[in-house]
Length: 115
Length: 118
Image 1 (cartoon, one colour):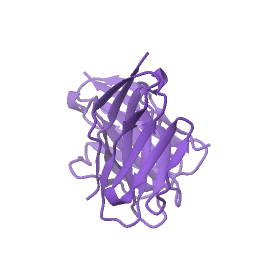
Image 2 (image 1 turned 120 degrees about the vertical axis):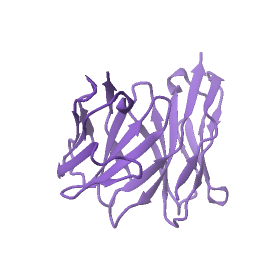
Image 3 (image 1 turned 45 degrees about the vertical axis):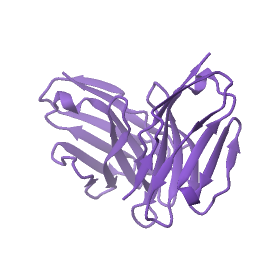
Image 4 (image 1 turned 180 degrees about the vertical axis):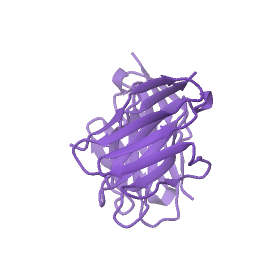
């Protein structure tokens, strides 16, 4: 139980294009979803927190207009990297949480390379 | 502010040795949760343990054990008789409740790269 999937698992795109990453909770309804970014050999940094049906809360320093997060249902959240640049190349990881449950359930991650 | 410090950037041991990964945290919350995750080269995070701030009992799970000491704000992780498959990056994380009943927002340490040599 508590499986989270991400799609795609890896993506290569050209500079200036937009990329959408999907995060799905497969066997439970996620009240909250989190998006993290991890640069090579670094830690996971929280980008934003989103609750179903409401706007995401972004961490300081994360551009909300560049990283669009949509949490339209209790099983799906999407992260769109708009006008991607090489410095956006990173490993993006989502996690999903349930009300009253302490664990977050992590997706397998999406490796984005912007050329 | 929440902060997690993993001072050991890299550790290398020979198989069957015991190894301890250190984690020190800072928080002003009275209720909080501590986690350890393993990240193998594939990148997917593997949950290892959760401990809440009210429970200072040490825990053992097979070759893994955890020592939570609130007095020193530490939550250390020991692998006994290490194996090559234990090679990975290990993250300690601190969780706080972000709103009533919601899942916790996590602050991760910088991670410790453990290499177990055959």
